[in-house]
Image (cartoon, rainbow, N blue to C red; front, side, top):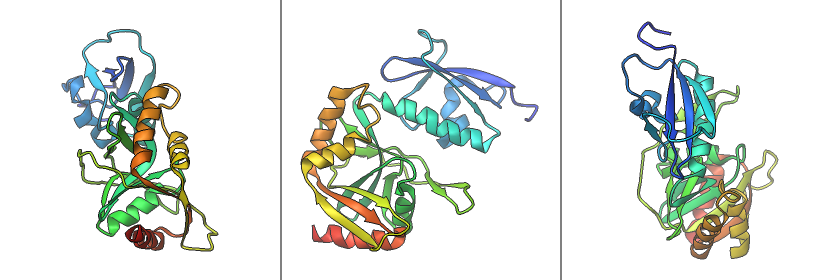
Length: 255
């Protein structure tokens, strides 16, 4: 650690729902105020929801820690802290999913970690498409329109390491056109095998990936219902990302 850094600094963060929690940051730069956390932590800090305050306004509901000199600590903080903040966003429901714009189509790809979202979004980014997120889709509770959680795509390398690929931030709200519930399969017989989903099945696919489904059930159901009414749903498996993306684009063009 450099001589210009403090050993640790405790930040108090207020969430959109009024909860408070503390973050102990090791390696905090000397003389920098706590409200500069988004700059100090860079894009490991959540892009939305979470205000650093001078003092706690109540009892901390949870504590986090991060070492700015440790990549593994930063990656863990990015996931754990971001998940907690995204669950409590005011006016939005966060769905664990990728969100990308493929031509005229705004596509939600729901799925938990290791479902293949990041490799598919990385292929789409390489093909020149706009990626809004590979982590969360934020649904406006009232309109059902969507925006991304704009942080770098996490690409897992063959050796198990993580490469973070920056994406352009886009705060616009989009009308979703498709929900594509697709999973990567190493032994897939087809590049892309998708079947249509009924609106109820689309809603279920989104609900099982909704962060606040239990803590904010009414808002979650309202947001998911609004999305389900707007989109066409597809579900199935895929092979390698580049080939699957090309097949998906062709299929979307026919819909």
